[in-house]
Length: 242
Image 1 (tube, rainbow, N blue to C red):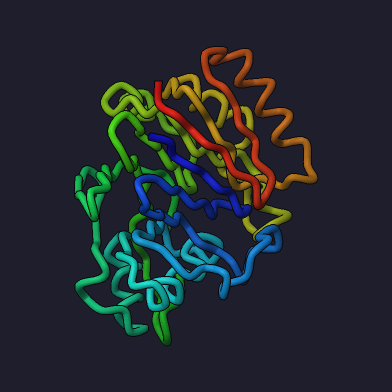
Image 2: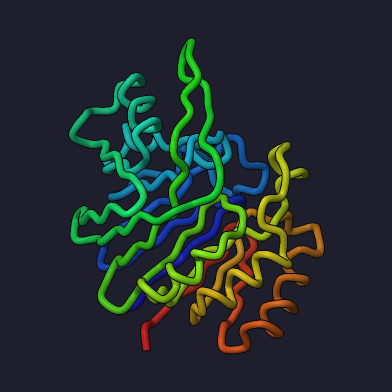
């Protein structure tokens, strides 16, 4: 069985396996790198939102309403989704440490060092940022860091859950979304060394910068067992578990 990863810029990825489609942080309309339009997304089974920033929550609610997918997020993002008309049974809230199974897809929620703060109507919501370890099929464990700063318990996450694929942000935020870089190539490569994945796919970087090249060189030095798959927006990678 193979698992297909398709990258659309910033942290927007699609994972397809066993006829199921998982969408992560689907920022389409506010994503200058995204090669597709919102109308191009007609199918989704599961939508994972790491936090409520516009470049991560993005168009998750519109996609959920269009496809009927199940939305998984922290409680604040779920409350925002309900306020905008998402059905209660289609939105699941989770916290660090929670394990759930949705449509035969296993999801382990783990700690993330960031913030989720966004406007919902006439109020602001401060919420919990989440990283996900997704097992779309046996033998495939995908650690999606979302947005995070480095912290030493990444070592423990690697030991406990042994992800074989990691989706790791490596910078790019000032030029892409107006924020700051929380996990630059130096810290991101150290996180890869701690987690020891077989494959790492960098996210949240500016393809016109030197970030991907810098990251690849550092990973080669710190974690030579790990292969870096740097995708341009619109490109895909097919993984077959060993």
